[in-house]
Amino acid sequence: MSGSLMGRDGRRQRETPPAPLRVAVALLLLVGLVVAVQFIVTFATHDWQDFAARASHTLEAKGVFEVRIPAMVGTTVALGVGLMLVALVISELPVLCGWLVFRGRVWARILLTVLVGLTAILSLTEPSPTLALDAASIAATVLLWLPSSSAFIHAEHARRKVRAGRGASDAKSLARPD
Image (cartoon, rainbow, N blue to C red):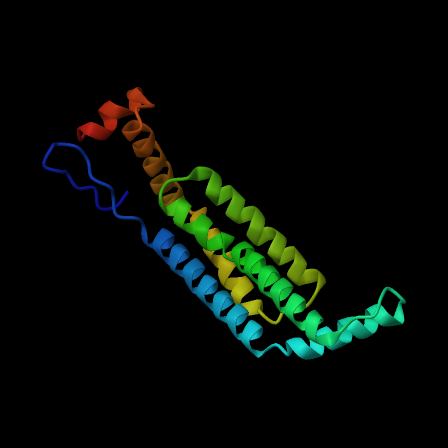
């Protein structure tokens, strides 16, 4: 592992994360930033009145009910904002998982792998305009599973357990250098 330092109290301080882990988290942050900007631009440039008019036309054609366009626009915008916020939160889950992995949460790496895997499968079934983002997410996930990243993640996990009072058998190995 890289960069182990001793604190003033004789206990090991947090080690410097290995380069693959730092690169993986940086890639996930970059992908998250690009996706967030895409969402904002899409929302800001969407023609909500046209969307409401098409929805109204579809509902009237099916005989559901007559819709007044002004009332429909407000409802459509509110629904659009809500759905965009939900989609934004879901799309940013890999960023959250990357941060949690960086903090030693082993389960977050597994969840991230599943999320990125599902995204890759969906990209194969339907062409994605964000192929570069998908490739960056896959690369980040691979970097998180490299031995140096795994060792750091597990060391952070053990350190967290010791700080929380669990894992007393690990306390001696973490408190004093070998």
